Every structure is written in structure tokens, then in C-alpha cells.
Length: 272
Image (cartoon, rainbow, N blue to C red; front, side):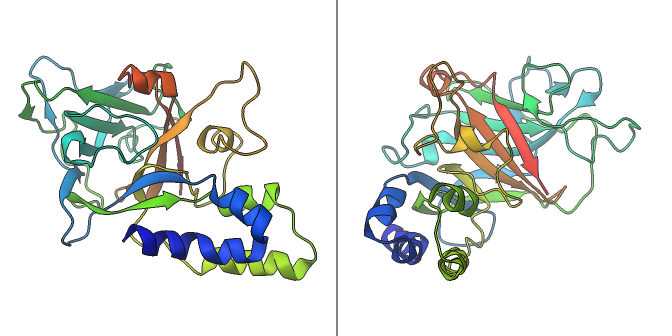
């Protein structure tokens, strides 16, 4: 499966870029797990829109000053294959993703900036790591049923693939003339659609509206425009689709925090 995915992801773009630029572009891939909520043969590695399992003494994550956040997804780390990603996740336990959703703010009249660091006041996200030895129990959200169309269910491992640098960054970093080659490049990206791959662990982000100023340098650190000395370095931990809000969420983390198994200062962005 990996070989077919890599061929479909990379070869059409490399054919347009040519041998030298194409090989450089391909070398910047990052390994990733593709996850899907659909039925299939893949092993279950987590859940979305479900009741999370939490320690009895752990408060439900909240947006400070506003109220409880929604549980978006739980990833069972022990269920993921080892030695695949270019960063090391803990070998066991779970990662739980919470976010302040549009449904959560239904009773609030304020407008708010949902992106931000999880430790900042008013931030809209939190990632919780629970080691495998942690005693937990299922818990209902304190805000009750939020409604929406996000159906609780399992997340399955759909495959392992080499995540490519997205169209916007490719176009900016490999300028192509004349115009017909630009059109061919756009067509090469359109040849393969990652249907069902809007949830992944690791890899590059592929923002549905293009990379924002905030997340572009964090999710693609291997190009000629990589971080400068002293600049903050972050890599993408996960992309998770939130069916309740119909948004794509992007979660970034510092490599040194991953080595320390720290998930208390995750950067978060979303696009509709």
C-alpha cells in the first residue's frame, strides 16, 4: 500500500519538476499514518467524537473563563506501528485531543481567536497524554450532547505514506516558467486526491485553504526557507477532521517536547 501511495503522490509532480528539482522535492517527504473513520480492514487505533476515558481526579479540559472544550479524538499509541514516523511518540498510552468548537460557543456572544498555544489564556485546544498504566474511566462531557453531525466511532489505520509538501509551498519554492508548466504542476497535484486522509499522524500539513503565515514554517521545515537561527521550530503532530464543525484541525509541537513526551504546549490551527 505504501508503494502505491508514494507513486500516486509523487511521480506526477516529479515528472513536471524534472529530475533535479523533482528529486529534491521528493526528498522532503515525511512519513505519516493515514487514519479514517470509515469501515474497513485496518486496525482500530483510536476514536473520534466519543466519550473519552479520563483519570477520576482529572478535571475536564476547559477554555479558561468560558467552559468545557469538546473531545475531538483519542489515539491509542500502542496500536500504531513502531519505527515509521520521523519522530518518536510514547510507546503506549493515549493521546486525547480537545478543542473549543463552534458548538461550545453557541451560547457566547463574543468573537474569539480559536488558534493559539494551549497554555495561553483563552486558547482553543489541549492535548492530554495518559501513560498506559493510568487508571481511567469513560466520562460524559459536562456540557452534555452538543449535537452536530460528528458521529462517534472508531478511527482505523488506512495506511502508511510519505507525506508530500503541499501545492502552495511547492509553487512558491520551485518557480516554473512558462505558464503551461504551472498549469501542468497544478494538474499533477490534482491527479491524486487523499480521500479519507483528512486525519493523519505525522507528515506535512495540506491546508484546505493554503498555508497561513502562522503554520507554514511550522509544518514544512526542510526546504530552502527553513527556520533561521533562534527561530521557533515546530513540526506537525496531527491533522484531524472535526465533523461537528466541518473543519480541518492542525496540531503542531516542538521536537524537543516530543522527546520529553510533553504535550502541554501544543500549537493549533484550523481551516474550514
